[in-house]
Length: 355
Ligand SMILES: Nc1ncnc2c1ncn2[C@@H]1O[C@H](COP(=O)(O)OP(=O)(O)OP(=O)(O)O)[C@@H](O)[C@H]1O
Image (tube, rainbow, N blue to C red; front, side, top):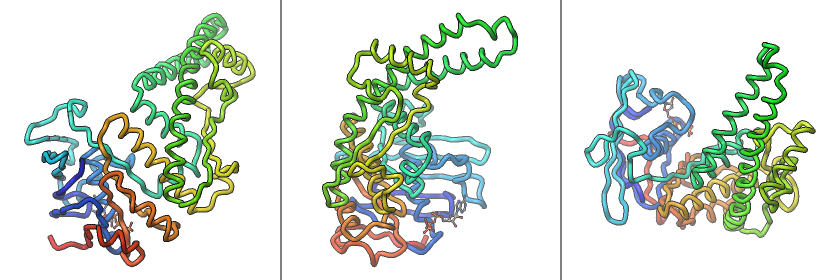
């Protein structure tokens, strides 16, 4: 699946603009010309929500009351057009092939994207919650049952915490009820941990494959699940439950406090990795995510790379961009530093562009 044409009307800084794309696209121009905004518009058309957790209406041009975006996609020779119309009062209309789509889940052509922006570096540098979110959403995408276990787990956890906080003595000292909640928490969390560990086993080889490809060296990347019950990966669910029970008595809170640790050549990347290494690792993670989803969904993703080239040496740039795994978009302030081989094959989109 690829996008061949994009029309923007009152989308961020674009009043009225049309773009045509190829397989490799370099969007270049000075700061604040709208390079990121083009990637965002493509992401929005594919995912129906802005990249960042900003309010959706922020995409509407400051001077306008509505925004209109249209994309024409190509899928094995078939053309699919998709439109989104959004007004400042929050009305949103989505059309595909001219037909209005009432619910996003009714859309049959799910268009996958891989989006990299420097914010993603928090996957390695940031707090455990960023990593948990990354893995939780990825595992949920390929295993919907995982999402249901997580939902049930958090529901019971909330109920238990509410009970503990309840100052009414009748409930406050109700140990029996707390035990019922604990048993449920153990049931759900043992499955969650087991699924996370099984997923990591599948995920790590992908990360290594991309890391070796981008870095051009054979440094081994490892991903450790950081939890008091991490070593029980190969055990049965009953054994995991037993271990979980012991650890909860020792103060373990549950899988919502676990973390993932990245190691490169045995050392923790967060502590010892260079900026270039961290960037290469995050890109490997994001591409692995795309590849796993591709295996699951069978469609090539659209790869959107914003400000990706900084801190990467020439070889890493070349290795990253030669990747022919999906339609590629990158932004750059200058095309001088792009590998010549890429420039020869790329569609160059310079900003500002005449309307
Ligand atoms: N709703 C909006 N209406 C009008 N302009 C907007 C809106 N939202 C953002 N902008 C402006 O769009 C401009 C371009 O932003 P964008 O982040 O796409 O630039 P860029 O070319 O990627 O810049 P850089 O090279 O600095 O990363 C910014 O000046 C920003 O203030």
